[in-house]
Length: 76
Image 1: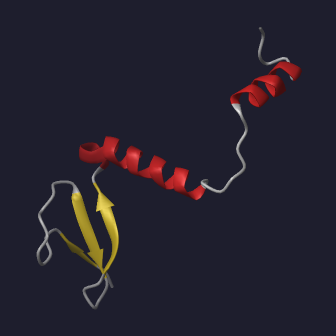
Image 2 (image 1 turned 30 degrees about the vertical axis):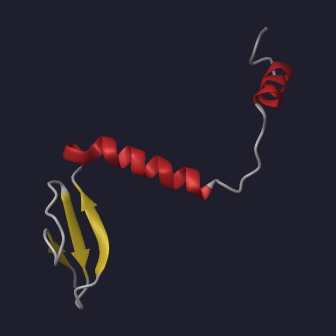
């Protein structure tokens, strides 16, 4: 059983944000109104993806260009 909160103790009410709490009143999720805050959500999501990929191997721009040239997908 979850409850939607729009204002909690010591928290400011923010249009477009709702906290979801469990039966003990602990926050377990957030609902975001994408019509109001879609741009902010995209930035937040991009940041999460970047943090997940922080330890992935990197390729230099020159090596990517070389690979694309070999595959015929980049000219010059």
